[in-house]
Image 1 (cartoon, rainbow, N blue to C red):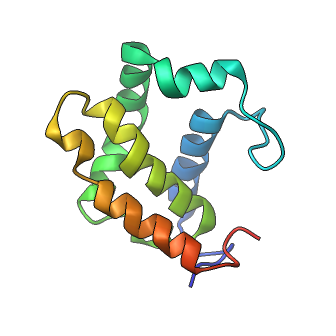
Image 2 (image 1 turned 90 degrees about the horizontal axis):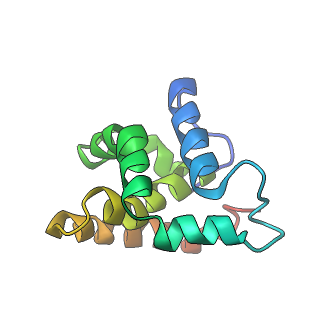
Image 3 (image 1 turned 180 degrees about the horizontal axis):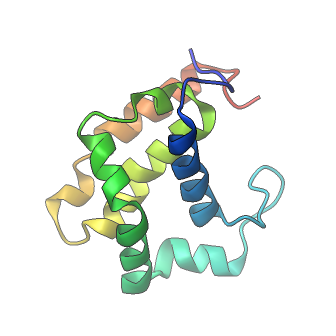
Length: 123
C-alpha cells in the first residue's frame, strides 16, 4: 500500500523534490498540461550536458537506492515516481553506452507495477 504521507525522512524528501523538479521543472504542472519544447528536448536530446548534470546531482542517490537504501520511497507517491525515473530514465543518462544503462529496468517495472496496482496512489 502506498500513501501520500510516509516515513520518508525530511532529508530524503528534499532529494525526491529536487529530482522531480529537475526532471519535470518547477513551472510545469505535469497533471494538467503537455511538456514544453525545452523539456521535451532535455528528455530526448539532452546529450552529454544533461548526462553530466544528472550524474553530478543524482548519481550518488541512485547508487544508494541500488545498494538498498531509500526503500521507504517505494511507499510514497513522489518517492516511487522518483525511483522509476532513477531506474528507467537516468540510468540511460548516467551509464550511457554501458550494460548498466539497462541493469535496473526490472526494478523500474516492479515499482511501476506497484503504482498501477494501488489505484489510490496518485489521487
